[in-house]
Length: 251
Image (cartoon, rainbow, N blue to C red):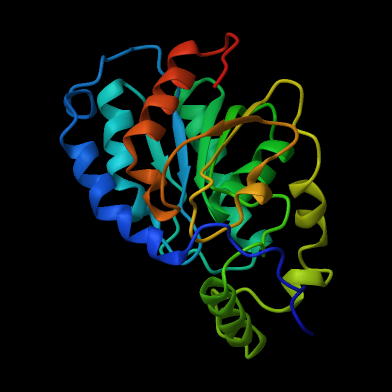
């Protein structure tokens, strides 16, 4: 069963992703990254990595959040290539555990495909989630990606079709296994859950238009796709969101 056709290609060229090292260097040179203002009231945060990445890809972000005072937890993902519904089982289990430990609702931060998974977890668990932040997540059309990434998705799907464990399959794209996920991905966010969609017009992996979740606030940054987890401007946006807590906030 073929995957759905790809959406519009990324506006920016793929070589823009070579900025990752510069973005990381800029972040590491920033004093506030190493010594952020500690806030005992900062919420617990669950982090969900992007496609073909694992929890380690968000290690810098997790450490910064802990220095601020947040309790953090990874999604328990070594390689984000699994069927969405199977991946969500583990994410929701960790979400319940973290919310119980924090005795409060949790902030979900997901990068790329991780933002899609986090969004559905928020839709299904509004009693456990206060805020969902999506970093370069093409929630409107998950296959609005460049040719190289689309080729990787199709390769993973072929492995899944052959029964290789931990891999999504062609059926995940348009079959019944992930039909509920696809519906929830486009569903309105619950009224009690704030949403932020952080995107970059120079994203070399996904089409930035596909990231504009109509139920979230849109916040533009100058960043590569992969670099959103180490981009100083993204961290400043996240700090503002966390600082304002349950109150109103704007990008």
